[in-house]
Image (cartoon, rainbow, N blue to C red; front, side):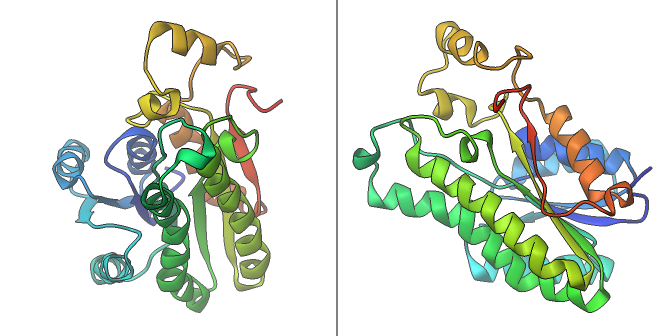
Length: 248
């Protein structure tokens, strides 16, 4: 029960890594708000996990939606202890010059602007209390970029730099900021990362991971629970690879 009594917002929390984080947080005693465009899937997860889980629909790249989810969390709980910026998308693998402007804008809106917007609305609340933990879900693509995922790579590199910038600025305010860099996993984004989800493509990618498997939602939940708990009280500005050795 490392998160007993804590309140947490997890964006993109209805499926994949986000759902793994939500499950672990609830198991560790936290009350959690799942923020997701897919409210039906979020409702299913909330029903599975019980009364301590709230659901909020919304697009985290829109200021009004982020303002609304922040107000809803404060109304429900009074305080927000933990924010997990997990919502993310990618473009299909392609030469960088062939990625359309609309797709580029959407990748940066969801992967980068959302972090800016949640900071605008939630950081002041954490600063006022002198405490809080923020966790950004980046990617090994931001550490060791893969060809043909150029602008996704760049958005996750941005998130790692933003994490360090936020950490150094917010440390005097008692707010910690860290990131996780997972390797690809069994999530809805896997097919988009690979371009095509075939046994051959999976085998080729797995050959680059020393531990020989993808990241799982459980892996992410375990790492997230630690970094957001009081056990990690001296850890800030860390971008932790959860990647089976992919970035070595």
